[in-house]
Structure formats: structure tokens, C-alpha cells
Length: 101
Image 1 (spheres, helix red, strand yellow):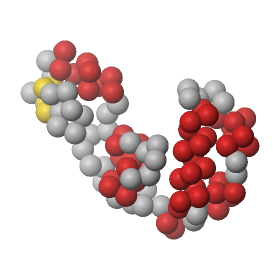
Image 2 (cartoon, one colour):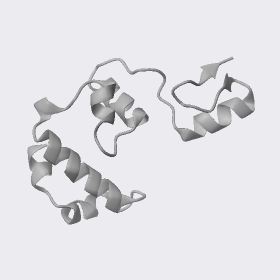
Image 3 (cartoon, one colour):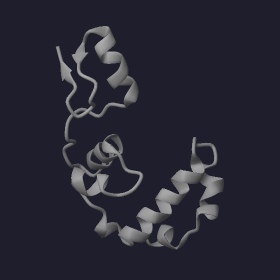
Image 4 (tube, one colour):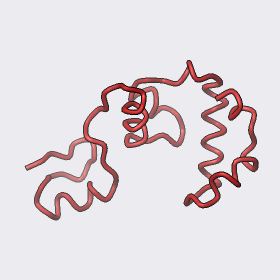
């Protein structure tokens, strides 16, 4: 985090340019790093992670699992939320309230 907090968006471009919307993601990464400043300050709660710009529920849960913490719910992306009800294996449209059948 220390090194990333000193980086500019442009210095990240060569590393993430193949990722969709890399300009926005570089901005979010530098913003997050400047907020956190040090690895020890990385929030290890779902609420704390999602409060950071650019971190959604899925990313927060992945970070929690990688840190050895329990995820809050099942880690799914937008496609699961859209397709599961169509297949009849879940109900609802809100990813936080999606229920299996």
C-alpha cells in the first residue's frame, strides 16, 4: 500500500491496461491506497471494504476470503444474479437477498 499510495494513475496503466475500464480502476486503486496508506490499515470487514470507492460486495467478499476471514454470503457476480432466477434455482433480483429454491 505504501508504494501504491505514491503511484500515479498513469504509472499503473502498463500493468492494468488490458483490464476493462482500466482508467477508472487505476483511479480507484490510487485513491484506495492513499486512503489506506499501509497494509495494516486494510479494513477486514465487509462494511469497511465496501465503504472504499471501487470495492463492491463481490470484491469485498473475495478480499475477506483471501485474508482468511469468512465471506458474508456466497460470492457471486452479476451473471449469477441474472441467470439463477431464469433457471429456477433462485428467486429475487437483489444480490443481497437472492434466495435458493
